[in-house]
Amino acid sequence: MNIVRVKDYQDMSRHACQRIIATIKEQANPVLGLATGSTPEGMYQCLIEAFNKGEVSFRDVSTFNLDEYVGLAPSDPNSYNYFMQDKLFSHIDIDQSQVHLPNGNTGDNQQECKDYEASVHQANEIDLQVLGIGLNGHIGFNEPGTPFSSRTHVVELDASTREANARFFEKKEDVPTHAITMGIATIMDSKEILLLISGEKKAEAVKRLLENDEISEDFPASILRKHDNITVIIDEAAGSLLAD
Ligand code: F6R
Image (cartoon, rainbow, N blue to C red; front, top):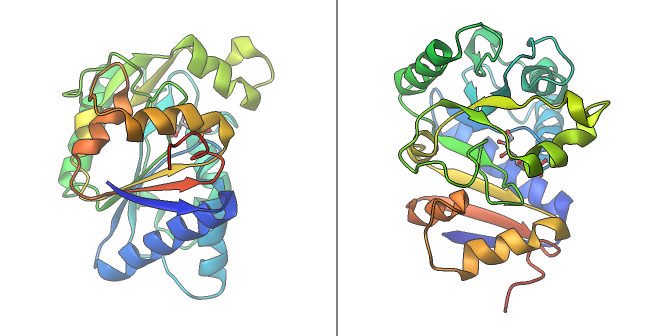
């Protein structure tokens, strides 16, 4: 694991943004894996600014998002589809037909999972996958106990994850109970991974990820130690419980 320690959220976002721009410039048809949540918002803002300054174009980029709630239409303001349009896609020159998120509203989730998994492989895998981490070590919506061999599948969300995500909803009960997520094996197939971790709340998870040698399905992110091209960007608050 390549560890990059940065000062704060802004620094983390800027580093991640530069890495994405480099990937876009290196590849003829770059395939990006994207995440939602609070962690990548600053990175998306930085990408929009770079686009506005003419420093990068997304014309040849394809994207695959990690996950989507079950039961929310893409137009629902709480859906991840909406989030991505709002935070990034509607502000840049990406071809909308090259934007991919699982659709949790087709009525046939199993088929959707198969189709989504197949579309990632058809794209010749993800060049750079951006990840955040849950307090319980989840990546995507792969909660503790998810097999490392998992492919895109439907998950029941942990109470702690629903609690953490309730801030986006009017009422706690409105947080969907299920989601579709890329599997852990799908994520591990990415050619490169960028894991972003910011804030004191994530400090325990960072300590467990970096200072505990055990690779266990009880802490899904631990499998990332086995990836041969991963960079973890950690800000001071998130790294505050590390020994050094
Ligand atoms: C989001 C995702 C999740 C988040 C994680 C951290 O697409 O897959 O694994 O990355 O829950 O969320 P934030 O960034 O809100 O702390």
